[in-house]
Image (tube, rainbow, N blue to C red; front, side):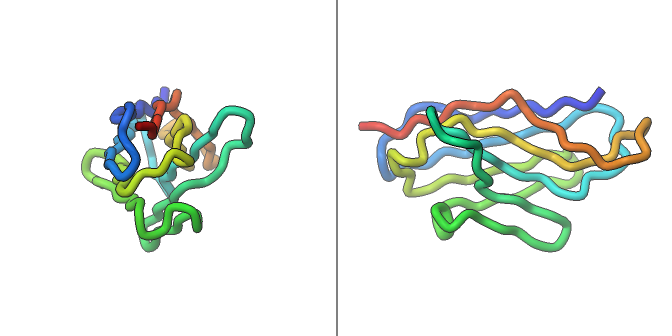
Length: 120
């Protein structure tokens, strides 16, 4: 069974930094993309950043402040968040599109989320 577990959220003052981590476990055949989404109260879930084997993409609202990276050996994806703003407050979810060892198709997997609160 594939599981994604996020960590690293918390309370930070405006202008501060946080680093989120997401570790994937289970019998995995291959991962084609890893990403981070966020959802604020009363709003829809939105894409923050995504990384594939060859590229990264970011929401316009986080470009220049957030950096997504991955450690292929450990199947871990990170989101370094700098210059945080109150509007970054949300629950952040890790997302992977992958194929498990027992599957013949690529499927979407989600973590349980980690709360990020930016407030003075």
